[in-house]
Length: 329
Image (cartoon, rainbow, N blue to C red; front, side):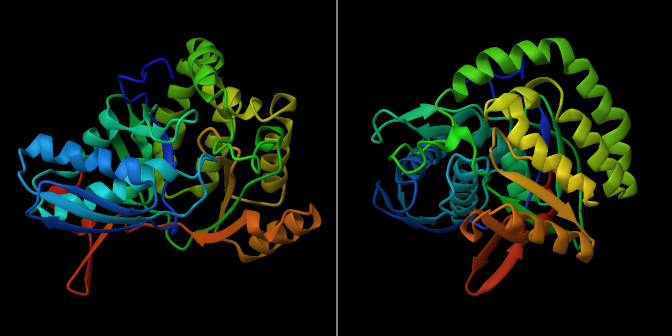
């Protein structure tokens, strides 16, 4: 957490891709305009102008974006939108950028709509995890400077994702489009303070436990390691912000592990919680538990791990970026 800031993306982390997709329809045009429609129009226009300036492109773009409409709850709504738009623009211009270059463009130009005035954008904190997962799919380990250290698939893995009813969502239906007004303060103070003391322990867990488990395909060991990390440093601070020193978040994670889930945790700054499993009986127990807890169906997403990564459809033919070796990295 102490290795990145609003003007310096990076810091590292863990992440994975699921089959909740963003769709961007992109067309290059002769006119020097950025014509946008659909969702997240300010972000779309921002990256359209960035692409033009980076490449000296005299034309423009027509871009229509569709997102998953679950914003600022730890489901990657902003970086997913950026990823879809950038992959589309890169494709229609003949792929001028490699995959790692696209990741750096997203990282250094990441932004969010201002909560004060929706007509303005603000710089965003960006680790690069969302871009890596969006382009490459699977389970990702990232280090500082937007570097992807290791990527491994999680085949035949179901994902249950849900948004718990926690204190930080009290303003959910009052027009405020955020789960935590104090997110910047959280990242700049509490999370950095804890990471200054525990970053070494987290790095050791990733290097000596997580990466070897990924190489072996040992989901249970991966889950054990993630569980330990969830109580350390910045992740602890992120869980604590949702009330009662993280009790609502940790109670679900602990309950899932007690049911036999291989991997469970909170996504990003939360409050979205996920459970990953290959066992049908465990899957059924989780769904039954959430129903008994009174969690609304509208707050639950049943999906799978996406191991393909970003795809492009042109002339009715779909292809994955992971199939093109020069785009990896």
